[in-house]
Amino acid sequence: MSAPSAPSTAPPRHGGKMIAVALLVPLLAALALWAFAWPAARTAPRDLPLGVAGPAAAAGPVERQLGARDGAFELHRYADEAAARAAIEDRTVYGAVVAGPDGTKLLTASAASPTVAQLLQQAVTAQAPPGAKVTTVDVVPAPAADPRGSALSSSVLPLAIAGVAGGAIVTLTRLRGFRAALALSAAATVVGVAATALTDSWLHVLTGNWWAQAGVLGLSTLAVGATVAGLAALVGPAGIGVGALLMVLLGNPFSGVASAPQLLPEPVGAIGQLLPPGAGGALLRSVAYFDGAQAARPALTLTAWAALGLLAVLAGGRRARRTADAIPAPSPTRTPQPVS
Image (cartoon, rainbow, N blue to C red; front, side, top):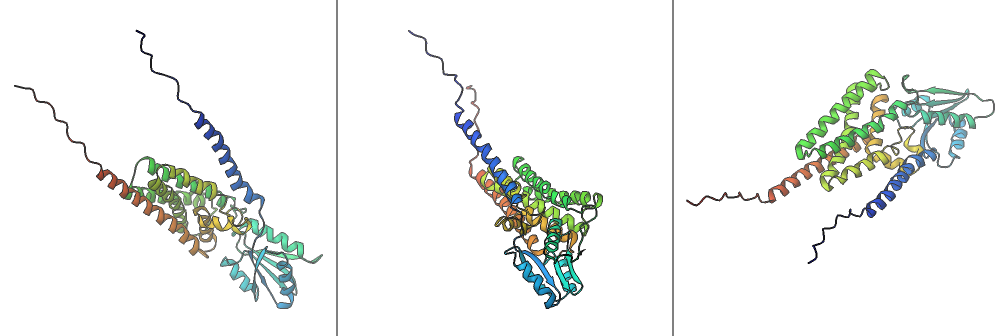
């Protein structure tokens, strides 16, 4: 008789996994390049809110010249310089051109966007008559410690990463329901306090109310973390990847914090303001430099993301408990008794 053949020890085939990796990595790289490079390469004013002030005889030609740049500016008419200044401080417009018999004055707000302030200065100077002098006044200047707004714009990505990390840690440590929601809220609170201590107390790049800024930074982190944890609670660990892609890969470059949402191609600018990184950046700018002007919409956006995420976390925890209760407990194994 022939000996029985030994069981096969050939390694499993990994061809499918190799192909998946070879296709997935370039796809993610292309998506990242599109998300980051495309908006940057297409930066231009699109319905950028801009005021025009002064007597009709002097302001009319300026208004017509700016309106000739089709789609670039959304013009707002004001009676005088005081009204234009108030609109800038209220964040209704990014700047204003004040026309009068003594020449043209440009009002800007580098705190709203240093990029826009520079763009407006170039545009107004270029269309001024030859030899005419354009006086520029920065109504709401950026802080001296961050004149280009680099520190503020750099805060978006770390907060998004912190939120994703918080949601991932809560998921991987198997915290569920109320405990997960409490852990996310506590972590976001600590992040808000620590981030404000760094950006306000140490770097002096934020100049608003200290606790209001801490609340904004904490709420921004919670909106991201709760969304990631909520997705994971509903669909499993894959939700961490979906949340990370949404918040970091799309939310960060679409936020418009480094320039302005109106400088990004549509619909990127609008989408970015509906995601936590963009809403968080807009809310932080309002609280830090404009005494909370135009803060309602981004605050509601962040609150909605945070609330929906926490509700998903609680719902996922309840579903997990129901599943565990539905599994019958194993019956105890009886130890055979010796026969006497």
